[in-house]
Length: 279
Image (cartoon, rainbow, N blue to C red; front, side, top):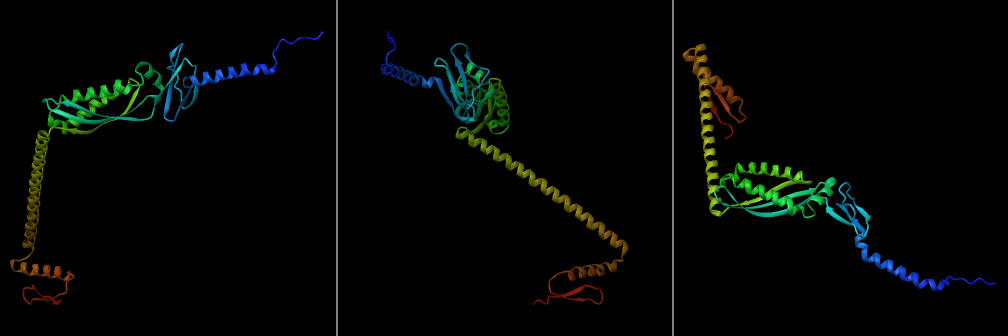
């Protein structure tokens, strides 16, 4: 008795298999962006899972990563970034000051999961800018218009350092805050400029006066030395020998000169008679 096979012929398996394969390809194509993530150089990923939420104890490095369709990967730029802003603030006297500044920052790599969970991808707008702007407003609000250009620079820098410490506790590393330009109203800027110029003028005048005083002291000391010199000579020589001694000294000095000359020594006083032989 022949056995009857209940399995369909191989040719009958092909259409269902093709349908299943097409369905799988469709599903993969539909969810490819949700299951395959590519993290490029300078970036890192934080994974959110359907069951446990944000994975804060592991940061996904560069490369390909597969996740379940119901999970999600958030990719962060972990290199140094820069944002530039303009800000209008008021000084202590109610003067409007226009600032141009920029902030260089990056997230802390090892705490990227906590940064994502507690703040989110828009942390520059939520945390960094409000913190720095608040510090600038409060600090400049305690300064006068002329102080902003002089001693206020250090006050602003110290206040920014404290703001950077606050941001450090929120998983953000701020490399630097640069005050690129400070603009005051023209009338105030010109008044401050004039005041600074006058201050430098007074300092220059005081320097010149001090220099002249020192020069006068130097000449006085030099004169004292010359007087003492001749007092010693007078004690060593008679009065009628002083001129003779000076003539000898002058002759020695002239003989050392490189200019062509003829020197005739006087017969009495010893004073030199000079003829220029170059003519």
